[in-house]
Image 1: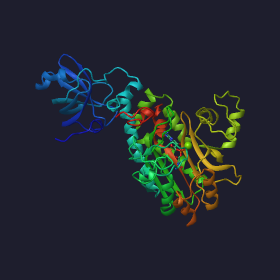
Image 2: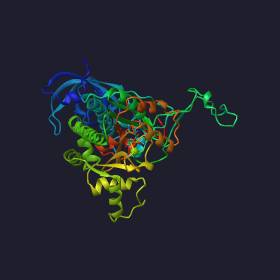
Image 3: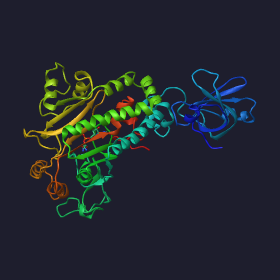
Image 4: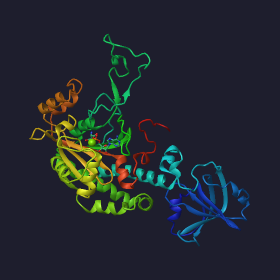
Length: 461
Ligand code: 4AD
Ligand code: MG
């Protein structure tokens, strides 16, 4: 007999005389003549109720059917007598596949999120984390579906790279040199000529530059992969390793870029609502009471658009005392981004045309000479989830921006070539996958939407 997943058993349309279930015991309650076992196999939020009669030969082992134990059950699927579930299983036989003693940490009582992070190898067996990672899986699939349906091609950009796309210097070095005794140049500097790649190399902070290459050949492309940033910021929204989706479109300007970003975010929310309804309902009950309302609100309305200059004026004149006062030319802090999305516009807002000095070298310079065609999508509860721009397609302007950022034309010769041969207006953005998951699930800390968080000082598991 082959195994049936709990999810499929619960969705059955008729009773079954025999079925095989395998999973982990959540709880066991003993009555006089039988025991109730709740079995969960991770296929759905809900477990299935098993009734093990005391007359079963295996019943002698019932004391070993403990929370956390792996169990195999053969039995009949019958309409449930009890409240709250349509089906239950009358066991004909059960086998304890793997025992769990009383030290199993996920006993019924509630645990803090901090504690659950310390047991990241067991937390996927809890309701909350099972739900988070089912949604994560579904949305990873939906991302491909969204782009593939639109004719975008999926490009695998390299993880090891010699370039610093964002220019923020937040790079993890990749090297095989002996840290105790690295080869030196006559001036005492480390000689990376002798390193594995014969030059300094790093883990990528973004696949954008390589995606641009492919957009300028296949027109519409996207990347979806891990990115790495050695930002020493211990916030609820920053991870040192996170996943980013980066579409890049040839013959596209900033307006088209913003339109795609809005469509994409709405698509993912809609997809989660459709395919992860039970998990979202759980988040709405136990994580964030406003969640489901917020999803609908976000889906129903067009996102607002606002220039950086207007946004700064709003922040300066709204009468609020800021922890970090802000004026034209400053980076917006999280408190400002959240104010715009949560209190001023009360919906997702795309801020665009940022000061040139705040942004990386590749963004297209506007006619005013002091702003670039950057855009950030800010959402309630989180702030920035998307950063993007139209790219500088004019060779001479790009060279000037590179000079301002002290970038070597020799290193970026291939990037300049794209502007030498058949250059086109093009644009793209990056969506932080974990930030999107925070938005969809209401989970407040990035450490809890990625299986194993890498943050300053933490790389366990
Ligand atoms: O705004 P960012 O830095 O933009 C880029 O990397 C561009 N190259 C993207 C592009 O145009 N192709 O990052 C994009 C998004 C942010 O909006 C945020 O959602 C996420 O990536 N992100 C992070 N997520 C988690 N932890 C971090 N440390 C993050 N840094 C950025
Ligand atoms: Mg950004």
